[in-house]
Image 1 (cartoon, helix red, strand yellow):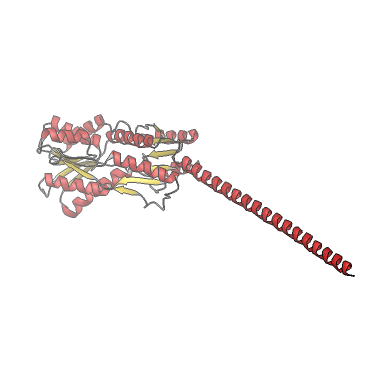
Image 2: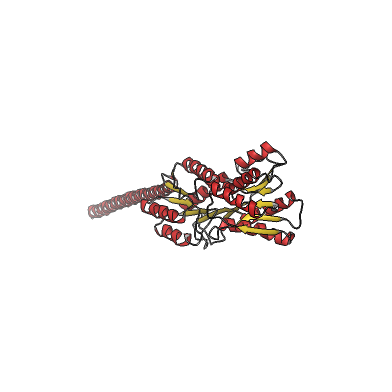
Length: 357
């Protein structure tokens, strides 16, 4: 009986030991399976993080990588267009992009064709100035439909449809010009002033003239303003226009010219006609104008010229394009634009004047 009990106890003990061993093996297997699963999950998480980082890097590379940017200025025969294009090209190349400059020569039909060709060529971005403010609305829509961002500068589409816009406060510039004119004329109440009439399709010149005439209407209502236009806006055409105006209005006291070529052509025409008592207030504050003022001195009859920095405007355009590429900027509407303030070049400050101040 004792042997049986001992045998039975032994059997129970052995069974318990075996069961315990099986339990330990199962627990070990569970732990190992759990560890393997955790490792797999960690690896998957690392892979997902790597893929996400790769996507972010790819997006960053796409924003800042190799791109071709087209510059379409007004007319490369104009000083401002040349200076702007060179500054924009430098800013573009500093970002590692490629720049192409296309010259429409001041012709709207050529500008339209150039930009349509740029769409076909699939450039990455366009910086342009609108030769025809109304016509530019449809053209900009074509560019955007092709998925190409477009930044307008100076003269903009009338509906404000570009992806970004940069301009100077031309109305303020016109007011500054009028104020300087009346300083030159010592506040002459019945002065006669001739202005090259603006082309209605050119938004910037319209604002400059409105600023000028608005200042006169408010402060010198008896000043006579004569608006006259020529179809030829080249330097030679402006010289002929100025010569005709000198003949037609021999008692004119001053001329306001709202862009650089007209400014210098009018000044030269007055000097050639020996009308050395007539003042010119110009625009664009170019190096040529500054050098003339410095050489003649404080008595220079090119009295003043509000100006825009081509370099500042160009840099702002390129930066705006980059912000569009990386998704940090989206234009909220026509009034959403970068508007810079004009600076004033005068015969008195010509020696120390800096257009980029």
